[in-house]
Length: 171
Image (tube, rainbow, N blue to C red; front, side):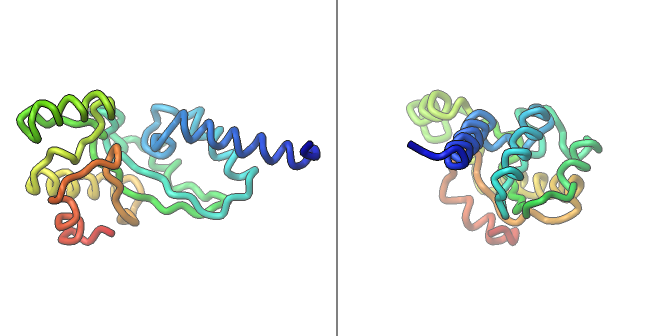
């Protein structure tokens, strides 16, 4: 049987895992879930975590424009007891490609398996470049810096993404 401190540490880890699973990447995307952001950060502090990666979405699902939300920008730039590596994570985090991109079967898989959030999987190089540039501008406006890196929404992308990221200086 675990001792009381071990049981408490296990409970905090489980709570952090629940918060991560429940809020997903949105833990740093949008003001949509303010209460969960504050809860998650309290758990991270309590666990003594030294460094985290937050994923930033400029206009989550076409709403919540981060660049014009002063309070959200203040929250993003706030001092924390842990370091944060901020990554750009798409632009809308929502796929807007037509079924023809990859065929109907692929389109249905993307819609059903990712809730339509595979934003970069069906975009051509030109569309990816536009979204990356616009995302970086929103990121700069909100955080006053460039993103450390890029993570595609739903972790889905096509062969055009890596060259676009390299050309634009992302890692």
